[in-house]
Length: 383
Image (cartoon, rainbow, N blue to C red; front, side, top):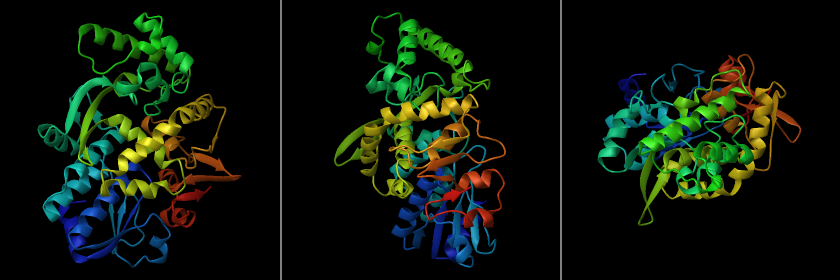
């Protein structure tokens, strides 16, 4: 979709609804649209309920990674092969209203990482995010670093970070502290593997150790799945993000912040609504990360066990847990590694009911009208 089409739509309809799918990319985009257009005089609402596309099909609606029912009134904006929908929204808003703030652009970087569009070898993103990355770097809000993409590796230590990182998922290591400890002990030649902390890869010795670690992790992964998960490409390269919150400067690891959002979104049925609020205030993210830290270690163990069963062909349906009330993070893990079932949706049972999420129905080719009719107001759908 061209910038002019987007601008013509929002100028034609000063009042409209935004309906995103439940991907992190779409939810952040919806929040950015809500905040910026509302501040400039538009009457914008965000609604996750896909049934409004059927019940109010003649109302102007902007769809994010969803398919229109009424092509005359519904404008669809989708992620491309190189750019997240957040990046496209931010770029179009800059043309439409004259600019967005730094926080919106930082969230764009997280969406680009979520879509796996960052290539550390090429030292940049595939699409629009690359321009935004360079701008934020020049403002010292973003620092590109050579390190491992492990959640909390700077603060928590290598063993803990290996154990708790769900994206990228490392078969045989994620959720398995004994395996993670054994690998680190072997590669680094230490008695106490928990003593190893990794901030940046800055020396030849660091490069040798990390290369040996990734090789070992790949070998372990291949013992559990025939598919090459390309860990050598997905485990290296991250960013430190500088954000201002309540008069203080917070430094975040970008992939850990991304992990916090993914974990939180699936922790309750209505949690996607809170993700939409993240662009509205920087203060929301530290609250999300606090919740993430309180549940992640338990979730990594229980969820990794289910994913391992799935990889071995022993499980077709995932199960909810106290800290896992939606299947979105499971979908995201499988999509990140391109291991989703080809002809059926990722299924999830909770309280005796088998469900999936709307974006999974659309992925396997269910017609939009049928898919929308099967789903709740938070896009949990019957299968």
